[in-house]
Image 1 (tube, rainbow, N blue to C red):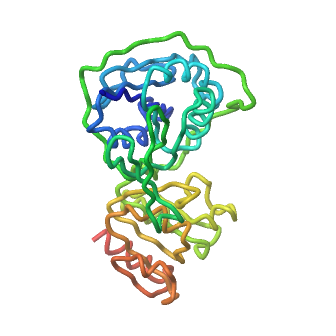
Image 2 (image 1 turned 90 degrees about the vertical axis):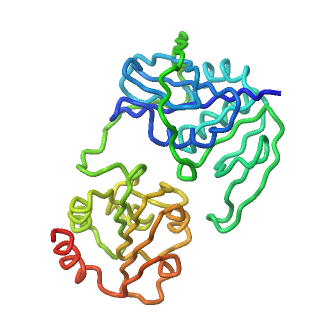
Length: 306
């Protein structure tokens, strides 16, 4: 039986394009049968979709701010009932939307899938990434995909667009405002180089920002730094933040709590600087330096400029 898969794509209001996490999640479906997509966006005129998508259901939102997840459930459930597998990148919005659709259609749902071993046999990480669990799910079902575990696919020039009439449903949640980040730095989600700081950096992350600008890197942080208000929460890396997969991760003053380590396991190479030689982060590092990061930073910036 040929399995029909529907992927829910999220819209990036900054780029006015498909969100990068959705592009990465498509990598999980390379060997799937029929793959269609659905997207809710104000406009898709200049949008290019990636393989293996061949058809896109498009609902025009007629608003320039993100929709709450419950606003799309009615429309999404109507489309999803005709598919064997419904999936999306693992984001807070997608988990909330698909959970509601799962209840509506009375279908099982599994979250945080990091590998599709074969049709209906899914792998997901457990205990902050320390174990992998294998699950067998009978179709039809829903799932969310960890974007950091997959590579984006190539663009497909032959995608059929199927517009449908969409009206956002008023629910318990409402999107009040949308404020894009004003930092002149790459997005943490898709950056190839990430500079991350811990609580010991202090309330002023300016030295890390300056270093990141020299390295054309994104800036990330631990949960402790975010909880203390040193950085915005969208900079947080870890189990309850972003799971990233840069080519290079540089951790400054990061102790290496399990919650943070879970978010950097897909990094290509891990470099760390910490004055505590017993910091757990050194066990994960490819290269480690026991030193005070504030003493090392000027030399590091000078070397980068050379």
